Length: 355
Image 1 (cartoon, rainbow, N blue to C red):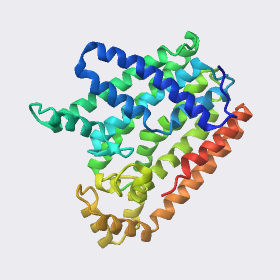
Image 2 (cartoon, rainbow, N blue to C red):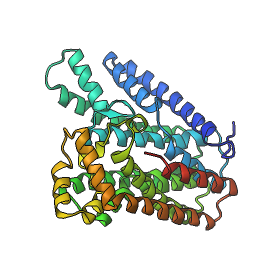
Image 3 (spheres, rainbow, N blue to C red):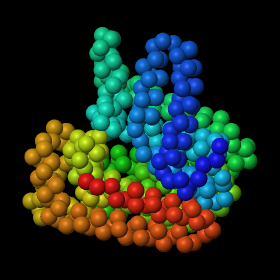
């Protein structure tokens, strides 16, 4: 069966979801054969993967594939769907590192297994059991990502061309995650340093590398054009995510209000606020940022400082400028017209999420 970009995001997302569901059902059969104690692992990963998710990365990979001359079929859908499992690994581990209680409106994986420990009256620390389980589930998702790609049905020549980019994407993701952790520990106030974290933690692996991955599964063309589009749009995407982490509606984000403030995230938004604040405001920010029991009144206080400093408007302008730079890059290379239209739409989806 062939699929097209012209049919829109929803049918393509459904095809990706179907591919992921079939893959995870096959893999979970094997887990259940190993031991009944792995039933919760199988169920947790399946639910985490399939209950929600925008599938941004596979969608961009599909555009990269078609834009470089590929025709979407079952094998290529299977291949591009595999990178969603890389994302699942990143989310599970990210929640452990941030100590997040929720993800997509449900308990994070480490909290889920912490609860399992308590419900089953197991020995030892429920918290440690939850963290250990989440690390292993994230690792399993990363293993599954490679397995899904290798078993996709794509020709070996396509896989050999795509694997180096697939590996680079995963290395860059882990590097970005470490830089994020380090910047929090450093208490960085640098916009440039925070933007670098945004680029590697999310931007490159969310947009540029999926486009490269899709193109490499096809003909390997348009990599420079995809970088010109993907890097600035990826940064804009992460900047929008940073705004949602502070101003987002919990009903939309699936996270408590102001969760990034509670976690002490050293984002471009925070760096810009600190650079524009009075000494008293700066002292107040530093006293509240990273406070785990930050109350809603304190969240509102920080939001007010951010807004009055002009940092919110500054980041919004950055998002607009980066998006315009991204769209201009679509006029380079030999990207097919249907892929261009799809990527213009995806740029709006990635950057115009409201808070």
